[in-house]
Image 1 (cartoon, rainbow, N blue to C red):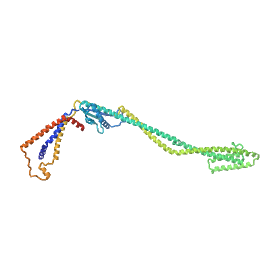
Image 2 (cartoon, rainbow, N blue to C red):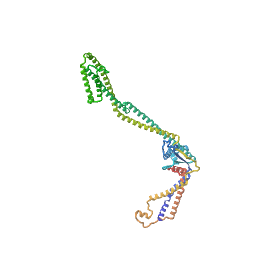
Image 3 (tube, rainbow, N blue to C red):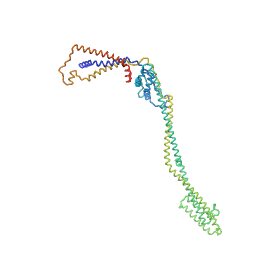
Length: 516
């Protein structure tokens, strides 16, 4: 009980501080509450609709989530340029010409309220409201907002779809040029290495085998012609005569000898000289040669007198013919060997050319795959751009247009006056508490004991005279009257002649972004 009386006495002692603070704040709040001009609020509601064409049939290339789209709409609407344009076109403020651009933007944003659906799966609805000094201005501002939102949303979506289409057009053009360049590189490489490409390796292997067989056949023919010339010489030396083309003029043994030698040549082309068959043929040929030689010695002299000269001429002619044929075969052999060397060289280059060509083909295939992908995406981008240009993608619908209000919705005068008065009372109490916390003066015996640890013997109160009591009460009453009457009058005078409190309150609400 003593504590309560003590604190009550302190409060009464500091009552003038409390009254000064609380009366000033309360007076300002009450005057501002009843002098603020009426404000009208208009609202509109928007719905963000999904694509008009199923994405399974044709998809838009502007892939923006609903929440992101609502956020984009809000941020693009509340730009500085938009706020200034709307404020000036709708004459939102009476003193627009005297207001700075920053003040206009700040006031417009404070008067605009945007509520968008939030959460994991929000309904794509946006509520926009605006507060103005007349219902027509509020509705006009919202109509301007709606025009800006629809135009900017259409520009945003068509611009993004157009940029996507342009990007893939450039990609298709670039990849097409890369494809042509790679094709030219492949063609140039194939032209430069046309004789050593992997496509013709089988043909060249067959040609190599054919040329090798041709060289072997030419060698056999040369050997056969050489043996034939040697046989002619041997026959001429043994018999003094030559075998005819068809065997005419030859004895049966000589014809048999010719056949045996031909058979020996054919056998040697297949078997080795040590083969028993070859040995047997050589033995029979030797027997025939001995028989022909012994018979020739016993022939008549006149038949052999003219034979040597004719046989020698014929032998020379046949040997000359054989040499010509051998020379031709040797030229053919050299030509075949040269061609074979060229083939071997191209075959040796083929593996390296194969690796290089495979690298070029892989690069071509990669570019072609990228090109085909880009063409497909270009088609999708073209479809998406067409969808956006025809407004068949996501679009904004106005489900509740702005309405002209019949009565003001703000300010809440009771809330402003009551809240200001309550805040003034709390501020006054807070000031008294602060003063007492900072004041370390001892007022009670308990304070002396707590501070210096000495108990006083007695407490002697200060005794005032009757005149002092009357004078002090008169001073307090005068002070309270000055505070309770003079301060409100002074505040009202400031409102009338210096700074209108409604304008001050409006600036404060614009600054904090909350309007009552």
